[in-house]
Length: 346
Image 1 (cartoon, rainbow, N blue to C red):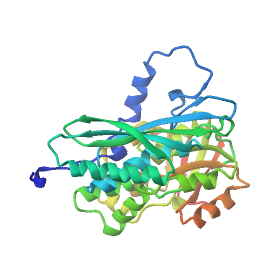
Image 2 (image 1 turned 180 degrees about the horizontal axis):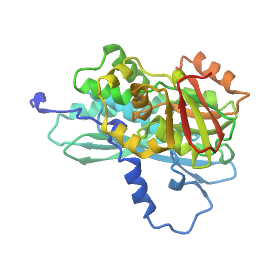
Image 3 (image 1 turned 90 degrees about the horizontal axis):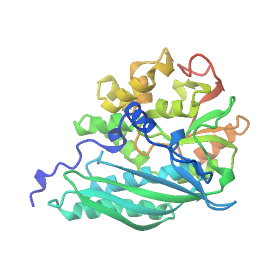
Image 4 (image 1 turned 60 degrees about the vertical axis):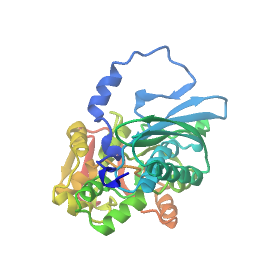
């Protein structure tokens, strides 16, 4: 087979998501049956995963995530796709138990490519301490891969995305900018250091970050993925809260802002801007930083709302695990502007 005919990476990851605005419109039209009281978290709250209670002490957490490749190496792509899917369980405060492969692959392609994708995914499932229990494949014109993941959580210890409180401190556990850098890489313009950092970030499980957070009073949590930092923050505010973000405190991958200045941008970031831009007020923020905040992340970090008394110690614990975590803002009572992005923390 002539591998030169294979175009593996056309652009994917969480940039391939449907726009939040279009998706919300479709979901709003779905028929809603009688509410099951055991369904503790469903899609109505735009949370990271569903949670269904089984007993007084056990609820299962269920999620599904897959997408096309955003990097040219199949093994690395498999790692990233798996880490991204597993992240939803951690974002709910859960422990991963089982995973199922979901794969679309062209039958005429070299099956060694498929093997490398699945190997990368399998290794991340094992790193999570979970069992790969099976999966499903279909023949397709392009590659897509991900996981359906099940975990468990105590019903009293679920981290929802919209339960933050005024005064809570916001901590982000990974740097932003992977969407911009992957876009730049596809046209040969990404800085080598920046792309290496992006791959390290995307292949890092949120397991360690979640374990650190579990020892503290976490009021809300989400993982930052395709709808961007600001898009997921908008979901956290839930129409009842506001927040301040300090742009100089937000961790950014090396080279991401320089690429944004060169207009190496994604269509998904523009959809994110169109969807949540009216809820955001930027004060003295450069265009490149705005783009980073709207940038769709693949396998992004956790964004947690933590009790302000505990925030500094949690940050120290996260950094002791060599995570690039930072305090990036604070939640407030509802104001006219939902999200204020300030140049610095004065």
